[in-house]
Image 1: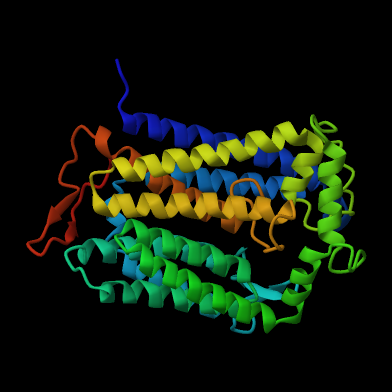
Image 2: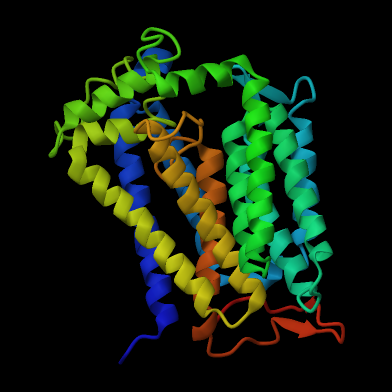
Length: 389
């Protein structure tokens, strides 16, 4: 029996996500062992924490994939407000936690997380809902609330010293607005404005200027600002075509900072070589392909924008990380989705992918028992049954 395009997209996205998760677990097992033993006297400390995040995130993925993705439509405004509140709570003494000079973490006792990861998903859902409800309008003003929401989130994130996440949020904004019908000339205008703001932010911070200077001349401060990227390039050079073999990286032994977080792709390159990095890059490429294919083929406008937004989020962040680690762009400090160590990024990314999978399953539902009753104004009203069949 011939499979529908939505079944192909669903199984393609699910399989790629599963492979990337497994690659991430193996690489964290290798890259974090020495760091775990030095800090906690446990070779598997970071691996066990990542495994717990994978289990939680994967359960969330399965749940959100089984639910009708449109349950998030009436909740999108609430989720956005919650994300902004969580971002602001980071600045409250006793709740915010500083890591490497940046206050990005919210510590609530049993666990801590980065609210900025949640804000990416909240912004996508909010933008998709607003674009759906204002679809009939043709004027540019309908995009104002989305732009203001993104500017608010991006501004707070910049105060947290996290320009990399602000760039990801800007890319998500442009992606959803373009899919939502924004004209190319307006998109280009936003790109110019965002670029100017980025330049001002770089000029206004000495450490960002140092990163930019290091990008143009890594040998400028070989033991200072240029140290990390030099060690990263050495890792790729050591790996060659076939790699040194799993577990045989040298740079992970305290030579390469952030070896199991933002720069894990360099350890992967050293151990698995060009072949390994090429295959991982190919996986992200096909994730983007199946994600955009899901968006294009969706008959529901809300689902289309949500699918495109999540696809842009994962793939753009992945390629920005890989570009920074390979010295193609200045270092940005964003994790590699599904592979880098970090529960916040992992869990919220898997939640988003679960919603993307729900969109991909949209056309294969046989029946939905009144998952929504539609009001006369075209907005959805939640009913009892929400399970995707």
